[in-house]
Length: 83
Length: 83
Image (cartoon, rainbow over all chains, first blue to last red; front, side):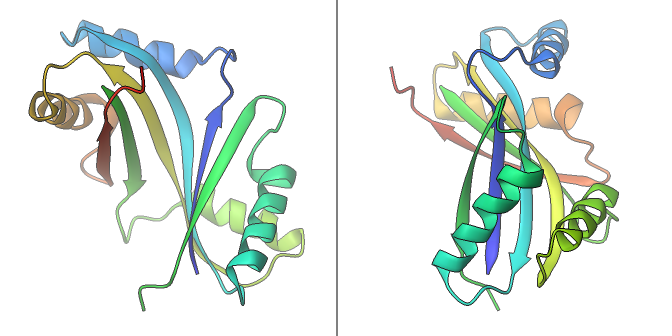
């Protein structure tokens, strides 16, 4: 099962990387950029038997290891294997 | 215009962070994980007039600054503002 996990900083948490990217883009001449936030994007394959089992595992993985629940939110998408 | 950019390592490029995450998850007891890859997820708002203009700007931004075209691929989604 192909899984995509998106980890983002919660609203209100300062994102220094986002601020740096915004500054760099503005210095390249791009104006009108707002609310730029950098997050993580994790792809993996799981050999779970069902979507429910995969979803449960992913939530546990995110809470325990992948995301910091104090400052980060996550969401995920589960796709059937292409193969 | 709300934009989401996904930057991933190209196939064949070694992903040390992904390997580390896989090892950590396995040590927590999760088996059957394969092809884990860590990428970047960037959200931003652009005040472009059209989707075409926004797409052109995003491709330029990725090529110049956000992604390393030698080892990374990117894709993006453009959404209308919710507000």
